[in-house]
Image 1 (cartoon, one colour):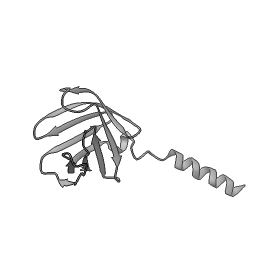
Image 2 (spheres, rainbow, N blue to C red; image 1 turned 180 degrees about the vertical axis):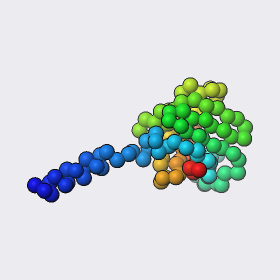
Image 3 (cartoon, rainbow, N blue to C red; image 1 turned 135 degrees about the vertical axis):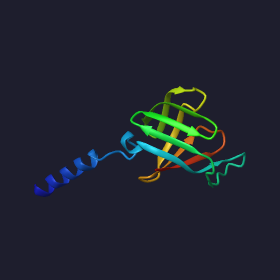
Length: 124
């Protein structure tokens, strides 16, 4: 019975641990580290980012800044997708991007692209 109780407590602890994709883990400043955009060949080779491209996430709000534009708004994490809303200006970002957590300090964001594209961000 003692071992069964310990097993049960262990399962509860695993169930209660934070989801690596939770909003709390995404809070902070994320800087573009690598990216790739395929142009017709279906291959996507990562390149080192040379331009400023920053996501700052606080709770359910975000600010995006790059060399060419900036915007802000709200987002929601639904399974493996970031869904953006109330974006100002509205043409700044696509309304839905897929998210993959690559560890405690790296994420991959994949917008809806016709050809493969990936953006790897590192937490500052």
